[in-house]
Length: 189
Ligand code: NI
Image 1 (tube, helix red, strand yellow):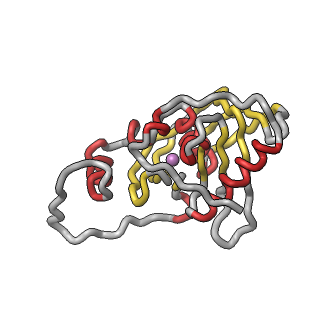
Image 2: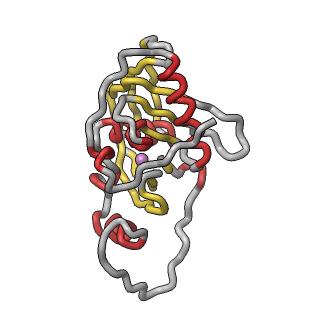
């Protein structure tokens, strides 16, 4: 069991495009296991390899709730083949601890990828947390981040400033009402 350091913005590796995996060997298995250990420790639902400093096309996801059995999923060299519809929802990212804002994503996606043994697979995801998490993580593999696509740039910038990712001061004029967050619908990836 090895929990690794999660790279935080503005670590340069988060902006670098990743390399395809060509060898499906024991070192890949070890890396994926370390990624799961790291993600579970951080209470995330998804993690992409660049977030632990490895510029390769690996992402992992587990959207199981707190009291459910784990549902670990591994996607190697993933590509979105088709997407349709739209959905707006709150997103967070393990590379931006504490920051949440709304992001628009496709609702339905068809993704091709390879499994841990290198076998070609396809998954057809109809909306929900899994669809959002896969899209968030595939962005990571392309050096794209959720801060590139907020619904409201102002809200995102306020969140980033509040958590120290942007310079500036925020004067809070009103007591903050807690966001109504349904934990099962919240992507922190
Ligand atoms: Ni992320």
